[in-house]
Image 1 (spheres, helix red, strand yellow):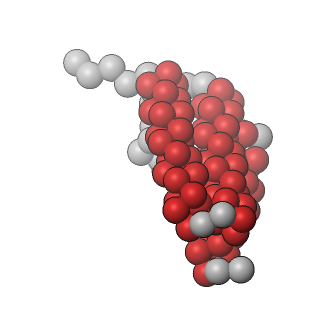
Image 2 (tube, helix red, strand yellow; image 1 turned 90 degrees about the horizontal axis):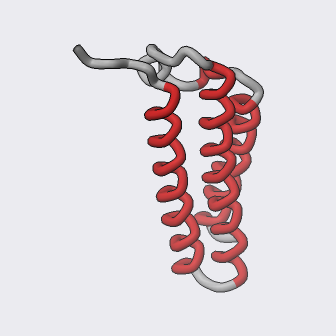
Image 3 (cartoon, helix red, strand yellow; image 1 turned 45 degrees about the vertical axis):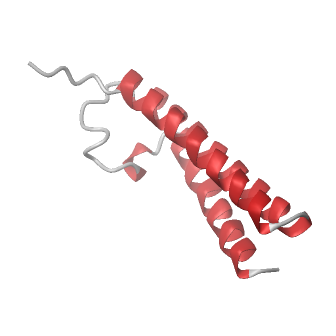
Length: 102
């Protein structure tokens, strides 16, 4: 197993644990600045948990792709994962952050 695969595997496992904790409602794992105006913490935790679990799935897919095929396919999976993660986090922030600038 290459160093790249080991790092992706450990990061994927850590993000899986964090995603599960967020999904169960432990929103204190998200920085207080990002949840300062959140009113629905349960929904916010589920949305952020899904985003973290999606990134973890792409990272673990990157491990498999890099071991079976090549480093480039593994990096493509990781890049796709970051794109999906960014979209999901931005959607969660827009939906659950109720700050209105005056």
